[in-house]
Image 1: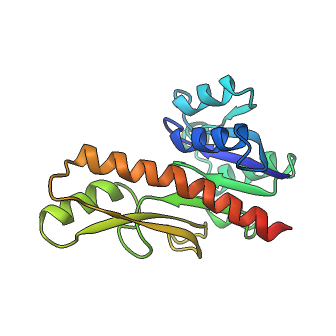
Image 2: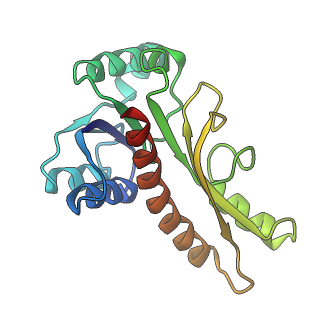
Image 3: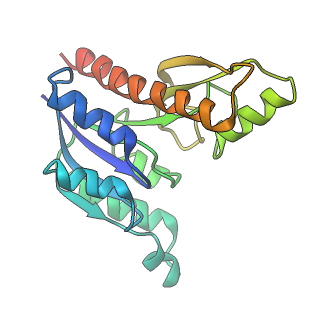
Length: 198
C-alpha cells in the first residue's frame, strides 16, 4: 500500500478527492500525514475529520528570525523523512520547494497544477487562462500532475487533461470544471504511480 504525505495551503478539495478515493476503495493508499503552511487551511479540518494526523508548519518563524527558506525546506523534509513516505503530494501547496527539500525525495514529490504543460506556469493560472480566453487567444486550458522540480511547474508530466472553455463560461463556471478535473487527475496520477511501484 502506498504511503502518502499530502501538503496543502487552502481548502483541501483535492485532498478530499484522495480521501474519498481511499475510502471507497478505488485507491490502494494511505495518507500518513497532512501538512499545511497555513493554520486556518480548511484542509486541516478535512484531515482531522478523516482521522488523519496533521502538521501545521509555518514559514513565518523562519523569516521573522532571518533564516533562509532553504532552512525551512530542510527542516520540513527531515520531519517527513521520519514517516518514510512513498509519495509526497502537493495539492494546493502554495510554497515553491527548493532542492533542500526536493533532493531528499528524488522522484517522490508530485504537484497538481491547473494548466497544461508550459502554459500559465505559476500562480493564478485559472484566472490567467480565462483572461486569455476573453482576449480570443485560447479556447481551452487544462490541468496536470507532474513531478516537482526546482523550476516551477516544469517537471515531468504524469497525467494531464484538457478542459474546454465554453462560450458562455464565467470565471466561476470555468473554475468549477477545472477543479472537478483536478480532483479526477490527482487520483489518476497516484493510481499510475502505485501501478509503477509494483
